[in-house]
Length: 386
Ligand SMILES: [Zn+2]
Image (cartoon, rainbow, N blue to C red):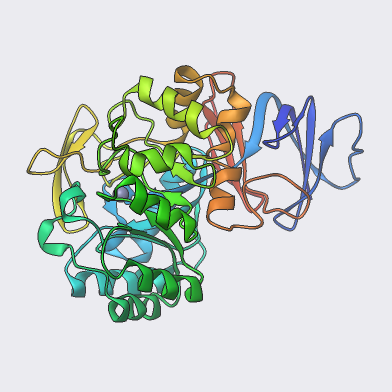
């Protein structure tokens, strides 16, 4: 049993100061103030006075980091990613594939599907995010045109099977013919469908939302441009309160002023602070891979050979700080965007908060919101001993 005392604990919906968190067998047993919760005898004490304790961060959009791409599909590569993510507060993630040749994607999904149930040294992978290949050729972003295919139910069923039913999220353009049939298969398989890489009109995106598609991938990026006469898919994402929406808050993918506008439109309960980070994250500028393509990184900005943005080098730790700096949202409200909201959007029932019975995925931050400690399932996996 572990007892963590901290200057404050943000749940994220409630704040306890000074806070006390009791962890037992990898789960939260009790949460409250130090006045209200007695310390059980024989418990191990951890003194984090001066720090803020929060739930671990959840990132639904990770292509890689530390020079490694998730599509390599080996235990070691996934473990490198898992370990590095934990240093920046991320305790749960979805390894994310990019549109690729059918055999390449099949092989990656099969390997990832067999790896995900294993134990890792840092953040926990909880399923695969399949980004493409059923996306718009006109809004493909860095996904290669030759790898994009129309929605194909049999192919999708094969991938679900090959992944050992580990696909948790799939990004599709909702305006494509065949979208509805994918939706039906996804619903049966428990896969959440996201709209993204899409040229959908407002009406097309509204129709998808009415069919239950309540997740949008990297809002603004690789989407039909928002204009005041045809707001397109962005108009739906910003105005429909049912939709959880990712934003890449690095100041490169979306201007800080637009992040601020986005935060006002979506409100604290629908923002997802995803990173879309690539193998180049946490590495010096240079050449790296994204799926089977090469990307060039300069000043921390990833671009493909055509000069298009190709993922990011962002961490959730920095995304959180940027939200606090750029928007009206407080630290507590910004925090919801990388804890409770992604847990709800991805239907992760025991994650995203520090309620009794929840997984003891815990982050400790200093006064500048820098990650000082990370616990996954009650186990200390990272500490920045200053
Ligand atoms: Zn991506």
